[in-house]
Length: 427
Image 1: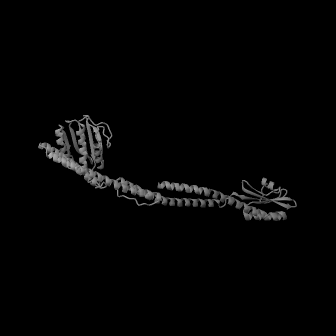
Image 2: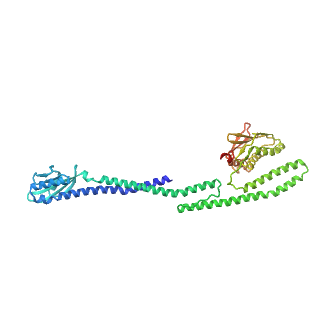
Image 3: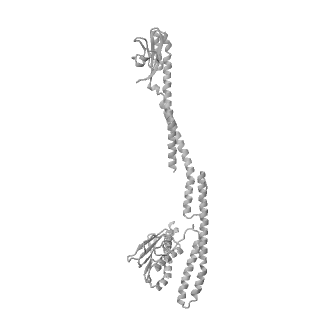
């Protein structure tokens, strides 16, 4: 934009200067020509008294002296064929002047000035001089050069002024852009210092107001989610009491374990809702999280006759996703397997290191996943459509992605690519 403003200023300056300097240059040329013509005419008219009254010898001497002083050819045509001064043939202008008319005409030699002298006893005499082209344009080239340099200087001054104005205008715009990107990166405390023209100051004020409003709305949303999650503790407590009152110890233990998992999920939801979104994620150990969640779901898999093939790479596998979010993502994927495949369907959970990322694979031997875009709230199977979206957002938050594939047997395969923790990428 700065270059465009400079180009616009240059174009306007050039057009303005052309509109003024071209007529001025033509005027300078015309003035130089008129000045040379007037000077030559005055010199020629100084001979009029001599030609009108003096004898031939005096006229010859005066004409030759004037030609030597002025540097121009000076000729005096007397009645008959007598030519005094610079010997030249009679021209059509001289013939016209012999009829008593003085005039100035253009010729190949330059500008021809002829003056009729009447009052002689033998007829009309004619004084002729020629202003050469060099004298007509004397000083014009230098004047044009001065005008061109002046025009160039004015254009440069205009460019400097336009550049300063452009910088003064673009600095607030650049700050607006920077603060907008910071807000997009969840730095909700970013603010713009209003500067520049009134319109930009108004935009800066509106952006600051928008950022403050977003902070308020997000705070209200987090509190509402936290309050809603907290309300679930009462029915969870009642459910735990009901589980403890069961007669079968195994059923009571199984239901109590499920209640514990649900309570952990609610607690994690409350912490996540109250957590500052702008703070950087600390990451977690993917190997430990996956092993823990597979052990939790293995109880339900055993009850439903499902075979679990768990392939976990040994050693800690740090990723850029917090442990609770990774656990929620894996729970969502395994929950989809149990919800959308019949009992007895085997599934595989695989965790491996590939290059600088960790890949988590959940594959089942069911009938496959309907072709649909992974979109929040959209589910061809009639569910809420949040499971895959939770997994996708967790992967993207850790610098990774989610992929959907079909297994060789026709089942569904979900791959979560998880990036390294932020502390590792910055080292």
